[in-house]
Image 1 (spheres, rainbow, N blue to C red):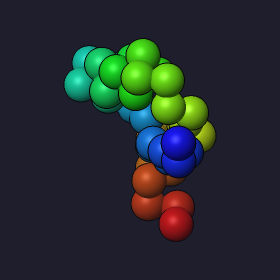
Image 2 (image 1 turned 135 degrees about the vertical axis):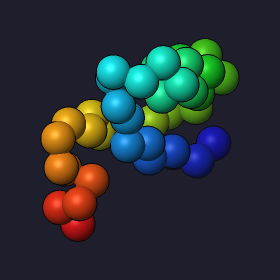
Image 3 (image 1 turned 30 degrees about the horizontal axis):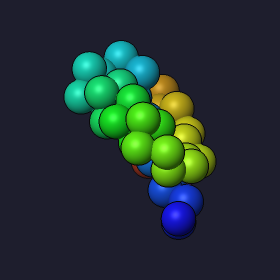
Image 4 (image 1 turned 45 degrees about the vertical axis):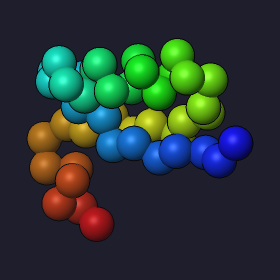
Length: 42
């Protein structure tokens, strides 16, 4: 299986649920918590 990268907002229920579904599927993840303006730091 391929590895999924997710930029995760722990304060967001949808983000938490998505991360949980991915983990429950057995797929490995690289997840990076988002906070503040980190999404704009690219």
